[in-house]
Length: 130
Figure 1: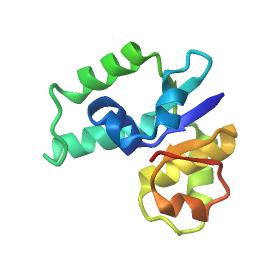
Figure 2 (figure 1 turned 30 degrees about the vertical axis):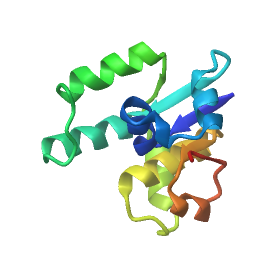
Figure 3 (figure 1 turned 90 degrees about the horizontal axis):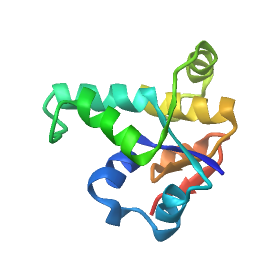
């Protein structure tokens, strides 16, 4: 199975895994699954770190890259088709990072692991994080 981790779920995985359901932990830990992290999540984390809203044990460029490699997660790069899809989505959700994740999941046809209730307003497969 393939799945895309929402940014907050990735941060929970890294710092507070007890916030994730046993089902989600099983999905993430299974060697049979491919877990994707959007480059939009890295961008969002870097912005929050730079603004002082997200403390990390080291700079994001080291923290993010080392955790991606350590956990064997796949990078999902932002492509033009993703950007165009995100721009065309209904405005149920105003967060541009979340809109990008929704668009990427739609284009790539993979579910998103999230606890964000607004995601259910879109035509995207969801896996509830909690």
